[in-house]
Length: 98
Image (cartoon, rainbow, N blue to C red; front, side, top):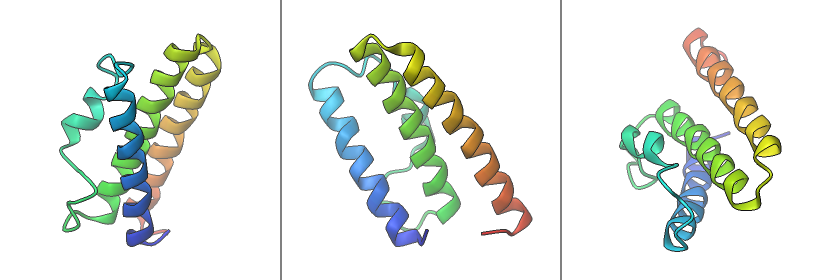
């Protein structure tokens, strides 16, 4: 995925985060994402940093959705899988693979 496409995805996910926060459903689930201090508007940040932000944001959204729907087990599995995918993606960035 190209950096500009990744930033577009990041933007979409931030909009979903905003919606969940407005409805009062966030309940602190986005603290890991907020700690990264990376927003889609930070175009000077590296592709790797945006990729990490997208993965962390997806994990937070999955955790929030699990709490909202009461189907935490299914969303917990999604969140765990995203953590594995994030680790692999960031490791492949270190080795130079795209």
